[in-house]
Length: 64
Picture (cartoon, rainbow, N blue to C red):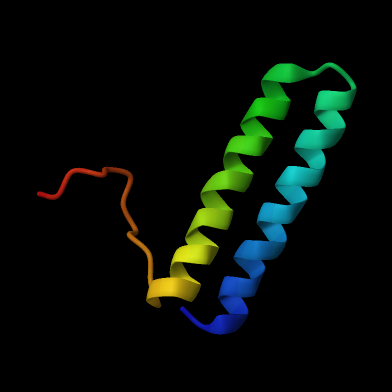
């Protein structure tokens, strides 16, 4: 993954956060929670890439 692609992760994460905040202010809690969860996941991937140079690309935290 290139640095450019990683910056896209950060931008998408920030958009999810902004949308989540907007939904929260308008009392739409279920979709706000979903958007904030997406923010956390994408931002974590972004930070892991910056710190480690990669991130785990799986849905499972258990190693096979």
